[in-house]
Image 1 (cartoon, one colour):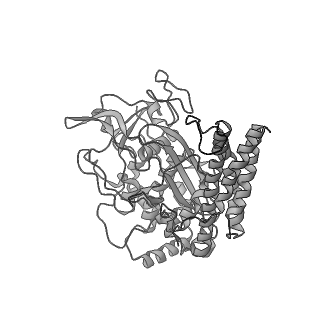
Image 2 (cartoon, rainbow, N blue to C red):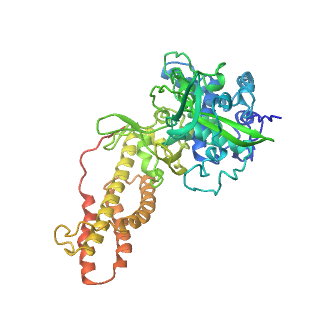
Image 3 (spheres, helix red, strand yellow):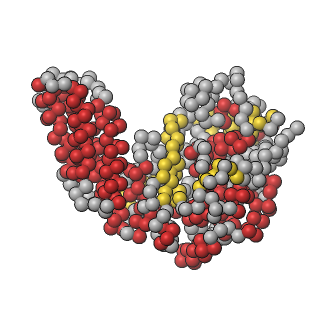
Length: 505
């Protein structure tokens, strides 16, 4: 007997201040709920995109208009303070498409995989925290011989994560019209960090997070649950246009969950398309230039704290990489003052390579700093402070490495090293671990006090303290102290003016 799982009405989305709600209650009570508590960061980035499509459909903010007209429409929606009760008819129209375990059209899945794939991929392949095949153990110890099933309210999060962040390369073989293939390209968000406006309520977060749809009508702006027919995997993918097309129309993987006695016990995960999907800019990503001037999305790095991206969230052109703020934040400048003053930014990141290696996922939120969108001079001051912190951090690393090499080289710092096989040593890593948390505290102190003049010296003080703590382990031998004092001057070199960098508001 096949069990269904109705995502509209079953309680599966953790929220504050309640325990959990379904999609229908989430939208109905969005103005009462403070936030969504996603248990899985990459799935959180996917869920907010899906919910944003709902919010755009319910409010009409998906309809093309001039930017001024669209902004006026958005302000009217915010003034209303909640989604209207009669707007739930949209959900009722596609009621059967929101069943996670539906026999014919399961939510965001392809039911044909049960026939087109000779074998399943395994439940361990679906659950990101489990090892599968030859992959390493990450969080949980599981084997293919004992693959424990999971409840549907947990499986839906892994479904979202696989669709948005799935790997490229080898996958379960799928045969369509006699053509058998067993490889896939990467999911649309793989390896990236995604930035979303965070308001005082779920309602505000959703409405502010709706990207401007443009002024011209587009065709085929349909989410997967809005399509009557399943797509041809060997044909051309629908163009990623409109809000639904960009946010939910770029999946490169096809997934189907298998269930037994109401639990998800297996899954098929394979390729969805053979033809490439057209490239489009995602409205929640920072884009920057490579050396040839081509744009690419900023990647997620687990060792990089969110504050180091703050100026790229506020400005149109930052640093040597000419980082561009996410489109949705560029469109937030003219929001009502009372909302803008409280608006924060939450990041969902997944540090992973292009194929199979998943390093770490994370989520973080900024303080309420988006009011600086209206103050370009202060926003550029924030950028100067951040750049100073980065520069001092680099000089601290160079100083620690130089001291380590000099102590372990016969030259003892007199001229270039004699030995070329001396490793960088442990000091630089130890310096990073101590410097960056303290630099973050100094950064926010300077931002909130609007202290933007000559920012390097404050970070140099932090770096000198870290340098002293780490190098004191070398002891008091004259050779070691001489190398340490000679390398210390590299930190002060961070005071020199950097080459001109653009940071235009």
